Image (cartoon, rainbow, N blue to C red; front, top):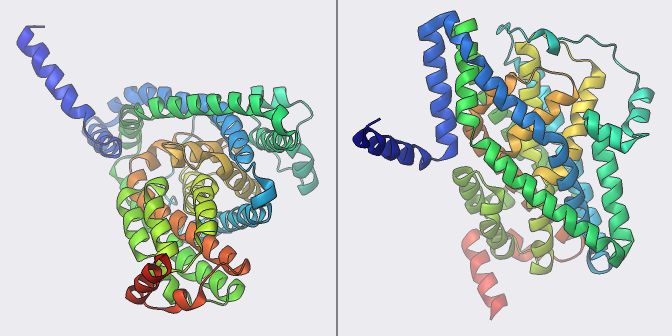
Length: 432
């Protein structure tokens, strides 16, 4: 290769690496589809590239969930001052997350986004097993050998052990701090490794989409449009329907005033697709427009950014059913319960992870034995879905903050009921 060619290659590579990851993934998806349509069945030789990417995601699941769950549980150390508020927040977030994934499953069941795709999983993935009873499911959640559960990837058992260990580390006080620091360090390393693996996503998605398009043709595009529609419909139902009920029933507040007050945070969430990046806007909305005391918002909102994943959980429900329908796999009601439990408990530790949606989807699919090839179908449209689910996550954080503040008598109701402009004026007077 000549110096000119080398220089040109470096410029092209530098330009490519400056493109946002989500756009790289979408380009990879489009190129994969075009390659599959253009070369037909010959494009199936590219599938190993995608399989390698899927294997790297599999590699992350157990250590990522284990370490990040422990860090998520142990982050609530100050039980003397924030015990009651922490418990309310924790219970609220887990409760709404379980309802969100139920909404996602319901939407996926009625809209059937994967129906008619008729994909075929690899033989190793097609394992027919009898559905266990409820009692067997509950008994098997608790591992008899945690090390074996970690080694064999029994996700629900890993989650239960990690939560129990995290609680124990908090209860032993100072003696647990060295171990907590170790797990915090390991969690940071796993977050970084996840970031590294996600950089392979454009190439993995290209390989798998080329295989899917070559094997199944252009007819695969319509189900993807249906997935986007299903996720957005589910998110709208959860925000406008469920959150309005929560505000009306539990806090006796007008939901219209709430949605007016959080409009700025919703706009930031939709455009940035980042709950953490929206946190400053959320704090401003809670304090200046909703009348929430800073003592409440400064604790509940950051906690929600860490553990609340209503939007992502809803997305898991829709996309898990999409994959099951696309591969013609019937899920039992026990599988539905398992999906709800897995996504709800996993939300404790993976909310702040880059690529959390895809990692959690892989986790859910693994737990109920669905083919991981389905991840590639979702990865290409993940950015579009991420915009909607981030809005739900941020809205859920603010609903929790408002409801908990009301229950603790830390909400200025007059401030809340004022218009946006009047609320800002009230906030300025309170500051002065």
